[in-house]
Image 1 (cartoon, rainbow, N blue to C red):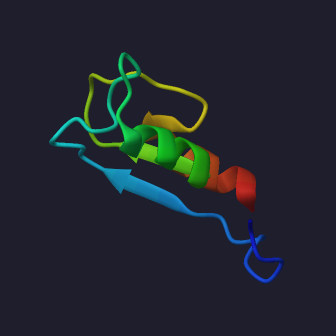
Image 2 (image 1 turned 30 degrees about the horizontal axis):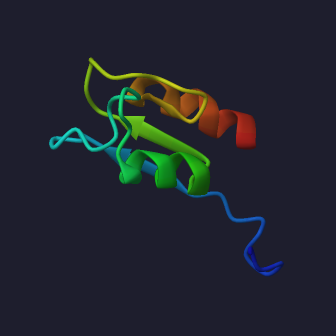
Image 3 (image 1 turned 180 degrees about the vertical axis):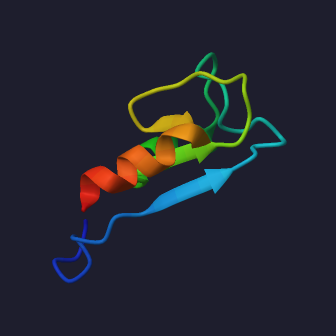
Length: 69
């Protein structure tokens, strides 16, 4: 349950995902499931991964931040 005091705070993460904990949807690991649910956006600094509405390449970060302003 989210607190009304912090509910307006958006949380984003940038990662190289070197251990591939969140890169692929096939047999998703707990880390990917939790991060997709909890974060507003997760940006990967790598070229091969499964994208979703919340997991994107780092090249999408600036556009997503502009939409918040």
